[in-house]
Amino acid sequence: MALHHARSNSLPSRPHPLSSQIDEHFSRLNASQLISSSSSSSSICHKLSCLQDLHDCVDKLILLPLTQKSLAQEQNEKWVDDVLDGSLRVLDVCSMATDALLKTKECAQELQSIMRRRRGNEIGVSSEIKKYLTSRKVVKNTIHKALRGLKYLENKSSLSPFNKDHEAVAVVSMLKEVEAVTLTVLESLMTLISGGAKAQSKLSGWSLVSKLMHHKRIACEAEETEVNEFEKLDSALHTLIYQKTSKSDNTGSLENVQQQLKDFDLCNQELQEGLENLYRRLIKTRVSLLNIFVN
Image: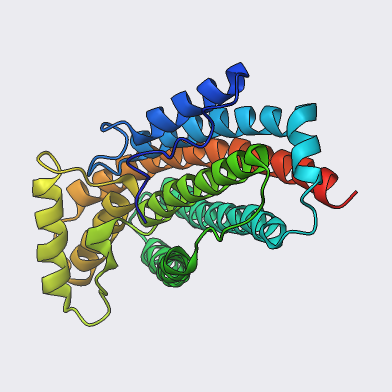
């Protein structure tokens, strides 16, 4: 799912300053530095911040008397259900991403706590690492299934001809664009949580040596290509497990895991805050729409 590279001129007749502000927020989201191949946590956090500003403006636009009057006249049109379904769909995806973050965070914090208490020298650490990696596998499978669902929705979605009111046409077109760009950013976030594009290949059939070589290669390439915090932590943990199994010196790997856990915690917290702020704005916009169409 790609961001719209060119916006339709759906709001040219609207003199209200909010229309130009919405266009500016779309431009920020479509800017080359935001939709580059980079999918780092800092890039995603920036996008989430842009989305929050965009949804703030959208809600203000919906609350304008002229907008409400225009939309209220079209309550019986088929696109009304499409708009409401779209707002609910975005909420569901946002909630799913939040759940994935929380589950990963809980397991990572438990692992960090045990490593502090046992200093990585006891069997309990290995079992907790395996527990974390098992949880990550469940989260990844859930995310991959959700991403396939988003691809299906992208292929199925279309804006059918409707309405004779130019004002309503403009607002609905804008709402559909907002839905699309929001789902695109959430898709990028879920890809980040799953470990990025590289992590999408299944590890279950690999030998321990193959895994170790893969994770060492990731570590060597980290300076040249971006490897997100989720993938770095997964890689460090797989390496530590291998070294424990082969009874080789794991001092460096243990320190690396501890550092990755700290970095991961900061990254996760920032993403979680961005998602929670976005979710509140999504709820607010949906309530505004329901107040128009249901009342």
